[in-house]
Length: 325
Length: 168
Image 1: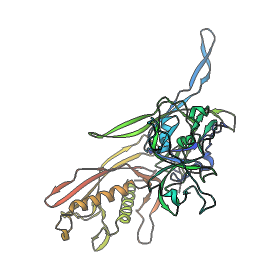
Image 2: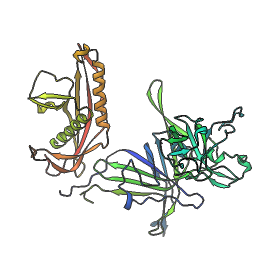
Image 3: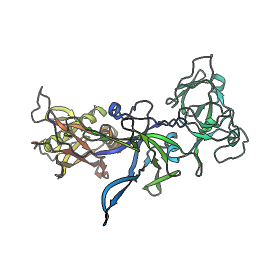
Image 4: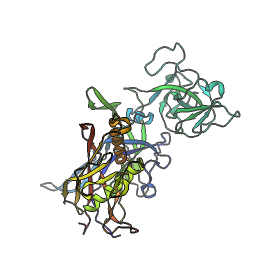
């Protein structure tokens, strides 16, 4: 085979991937395109999580470049970047827990099943007592199986949604196992609710089967094997709130697979939502509309370890084989 | 361009054959998957039923690139009378099955295939891989039409390829 000329990439759509930012330490998840850039799109390398296809992917550079002038009459003798800023807008094709949380831009709550007679509340009333994970009896729980015991398992059914996380016992700061899901300023602010961590956690799953007191999940919990002390709460769905104070932050990777085998990768180590929850409606046929989660994010900088540059986004291009460069 | 046409046809024939291995036709005495290119067959007034027939219609070449971009429209026609065992009353179902097979074949990943040169291929001789890929857009399904007891539909799909140096 001989080398052929390079052409402009042609792509059908954009795939998005999520990785958590360690908010307490201020550490994003960095993606190395030199090592991992050719990963199969359906199986991203850990800890990256597939968010599915997105549409309307729009990057905007808001960096300001000003002229430095000198002399009389003034002439431009140089340029300076006075401000760096970048934004990303997109629409998720999937209404998953993670996608909805990122699009909402704030803490999203799990609508935990309530106790009987709970007073009505916009993000769910007082939650029912959680179910503990058994230890020392039966098989140990894993990321895909939760040993709750035969008696407790009777309270679940195939299709049940579950949140798995630790009890709230007065923790302050960022909470949520695996992904920082919310920030607690004081125990009184959350009513010292034992279920508060499970109320906001992104460590959720769907029960696909129940056998011998164990809940089999359809997909692994994002935080992996449950830690000691974690409990299980059932939920009805998710809720985000316009006006909530928390800023969700995530590490993002967007991939455009070129038709010729080339690949463009956009890596934003730190993205924060720059708008409240919104939707984009696409008219299908009267009266049907398809509703996508619409999101917009502002990039925050990181230092490139190679030269200390302050960077908002890394755009990488991996040419197809035997292409001119 | 012929390489792109041959490559797309071979890809589609292969994918459709995997989806429904029993959809075959006897053509010139040989049992083949029921996907064919009209221009490659003997002219006939007879329309093969329960088969996918490809026709290459529109063509556009954009030369503002080191490798000119070729866009071809592939028209895929298929028709069914239903099965005789059911008195033809299953013709809608059989047309829907062909709709699903074609949609699935074209929607499957990847949406690209390496362009091959079949000019020198033959019995025991593999085609030659070229340096670029053939790729395509989503198909557009036309309205189903009914002629007597026959139901038929035409789907169109835009097929793209880069014309490589020296390629005709």
